[in-house]
Image (cartoon, rainbow, N blue to C red; front, top):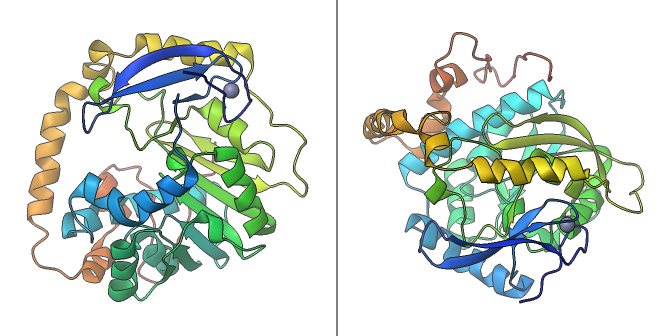
Length: 334
Ligand SMILES: [Zn+2]
């Protein structure tokens, strides 16, 4: 089967077969020789994907058309860590924020409480309706393709970019949808992280597998780096360029080699020891115990009760005071 990299147009790379973590189906994966972006060899057309995400995706992955309370809890906890990252990146409150792929609306609601003028778009019918009903947030049922020009100061994209068939084109669209000087915040799974089980890395729905190098490269024509953290998932905050560059700034051959070497190192030994996979069953039990105590709260009441300190349970946890609707920040981004 032929291959052409969606980022650099290179037609050569390292190819291998990997199991879809959900179905066990074999997927053709390529590490591009030109830029190191790891991607599925065969990328579906946009139209097929649009239908999949509006109707089937959440059911395939979570067996539901609306989030359950444990999903609300997890999404709320993730939202608080994302707001803390944005504060570390120095993205000011008060701006017009658009969450793309807003899911059940938890981030949008908590971003509004933290002080952003938050709205969102979400292609899934059930989830977007749930968000409007439960949190009264402005989430429109639609996809990235419908975005207009200069409609937001901040765009957030959490675990969305790896699903889109052409990341460069999507980022160009987001550049248009941002006002001059605007910010883009992206979170994706991190191919370099060592705490993902080897059987839980590749997914049919994940068309791309980013590293800090390839994610920055994918955004580089339209955005410059503000802040990046890759201890777990890959989080990046970017500032909109006044004019796009003619070409993306691709990773160096040495950086491509780092990704190649990391892929060779990955395996059960790294995951169980360095990645702390050995204690994962305990952490899972702890999480299930916590979720079993959620009781019968309404989703909004549950989100209102969350605090970042409780979630991180670390003495150095950043303090995000949501009660007054104001985020008090925080360490400077390193
Ligand atoms: Zn490439």
